Amino acid sequence: HHKSSLTFSLSRLHGQALAELKTLVEMAPKEGSVYFVLGKVYKKLGQPSQAMVHLTRALDLSPKDAQQIKAAILNLEKEDNAEEEEEL
Image (tube, one colour):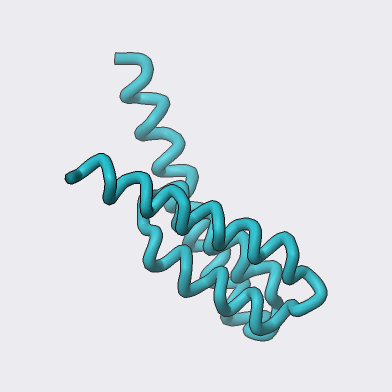
C-alpha cells in the first residue's frame, strides 16, 4: 500500500512539474533546457513519444548541450526498444 501511495505522490509531483514547465515554455519558448526537463518528466510519466518531441526540440534550441541531450534520447530509445521486446 505504501508503494502505491508513493507512486501516486510522484505522479502528482510530475504532473505539477509538467504544469509549471509548460508555463516556463510560454515565458521562454527558446530556452532549450526547459524542453530538456520536460522531456525527462514525460519519460518518467511513461510517455516516451512526448519525451522524444521535447528532447528533440531541446536539441534544436541548445546545440551546446547536444551530448547530454543525445544521451537522454538514446536512453529513451533503448528503454522503448526493451519494452517492445518484452511485449513480444
